Amino acid sequence: MEEDAEISEIRPSDSDYTLKREIIRCNNITKEFEIGEYVVLALDSISFEVYRGEFIVFQGPSGAGKSTLLSLLGGLDSPSKGEIFIEWVKISDLSEESMSVFRAGTIGFIFQNYNLISSLTAEENILFPMQLTGMEPSIQEQRVHMLLEKINLQERTEHLPFQLSSGEQQRVGIARAMANDPTIILADEPTANLDKRSSKIIAELFSDMSQEGKTIIIATHDDKLIEQANRVFTIEDGKIVAEKKQKEAPDFETIPIPTAYRKCPNCNKLILPGLKSCSFCGVVLPKKE
Ligand SMILES: Nc1ncnc2c1ncn2[C@@H]1O[C@H](COP(=O)(O)OP(=O)(O)OP(=O)(O)O)[C@@H](O)[C@H]1O
Ligand SMILES: [Mg+2]
Image (cartoon, rainbow, N blue to C red):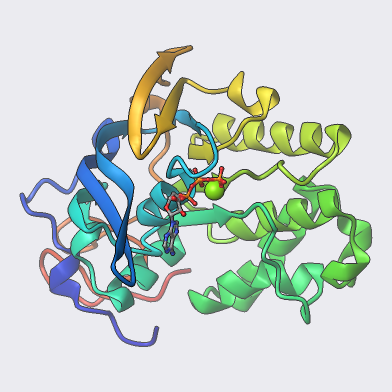
């Protein structure tokens, strides 16, 4: 991640570099998996938008396409057809390299099986994404302590994942997802392997993230998470079959501009995470304080 990946790809199509109410838009996304001569239609022309600061739940039976959808939103895979926009960036067009730069500063991913690195301690797992984005070491130190406090694991910093309970591992997973202060949190059944008490702690952490203005998208069947959602989508056989609005999206003008986004000192346009120069005027950015 030393060099800017394909800056031209991370240019808005219009020159409107301001934050809009809509943060994610999916237009007719289809995902097919080919296995030998069989084609599995995992997502069948799905369209929806997500507003800044919303808490969105996707629910639906096993095999409905929930995990596939989250991995497309996180740019871990690309759609067979259709377009996905995050902010003004058409992520479905990004190269893998550009996507990884963009993702590191914009998206935090939380997994059902925690996916911690088994040879790293709790603290090192949380530090890892910060090291990838080249954050100043002193800021990394401050953030890791703040995050360990937030997940209430200050006493377990040196523990390896196998020395932590499932609930504690997922708390580390959440702190790791928050490491680079992402704008969007994607979580795939984050409480599915946890007991009631641990699930409740995780649900409270999601509530805190939501209060901070994060946009949250979760695939889950957990009532404690579902009750927090602004909207609940039901997905079946790769299609959205129902949408239930439980509360209004927050007033997006009250949501602060994400700390990872900067303004160009030359032209004042917003610059998305991961870039070392302004994608509008090309000026090389000073190193982040
Ligand atoms: N890498 C893959 N290769 C082939 N088929 C896949 C792949 N990933 C998913 N599928 C298929 O796509 C469909 C949707 O799978 P997906 O994992 O998205 O469902 P899900 O809603 O997350 O299910 P669950 O609730 O069990 O996690 C399934 O039929 C699955 O078998
Ligand atoms: Mg799944």
